[in-house]
Length: 236
Image 1 (spheres, rainbow, N blue to C red):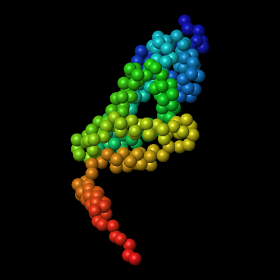
Image 2 (cartoon, rainbow, N blue to C red):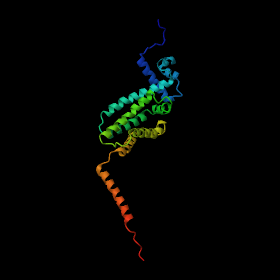
Image 3 (cartoon, rainbow, N blue to C red):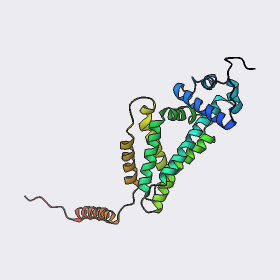
Image 4 (tube, helix red, strand yellow):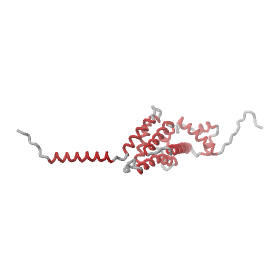
């Protein structure tokens, strides 16, 4: 017979328990940062003992990595769904830039955890989070490849360099916002970055290219004529 007021024990399946732990860990990590977070506090959010968390995760570090992996999985589904409805390399590129900026705007604390606590550490390269990040940025590389194959973009620019310029530029520009200073105008910045990238990698139209070449040749002829023509002697 149960005593009055005794706590009812609820036993969850493994999948649900892991999902609950990840959500609680995500909340606490974002509120306090990685170093200031105690696993015991995550357990307290769920009204479980600390040892229960260690049944599913070996360490606080593994828990942080799994939180970020889970976040990436959420992003993958959104990207694939949104890209499916957009045609044209330029528009698809703009969508990816805009979606990345919006993710930064919606989840600045998760971005800060990724940049500060994970990416700079020795265990990042070769980790599952690194693999997820590579898959995430591959969306942009694939869109650039589509643009090259369709003749929209030049084929002489390294696509991985463009990838790094886009994501590195966004991170640098958004850093103050990620750290809680100022705001981030997602639509305006997405349009500006798309304009800069696309104007830089767009294939040149034949008429424009011919006009530039004609001008260049004309300048060469002018220089040669000036060199070959006799100098005019000053009259006395």
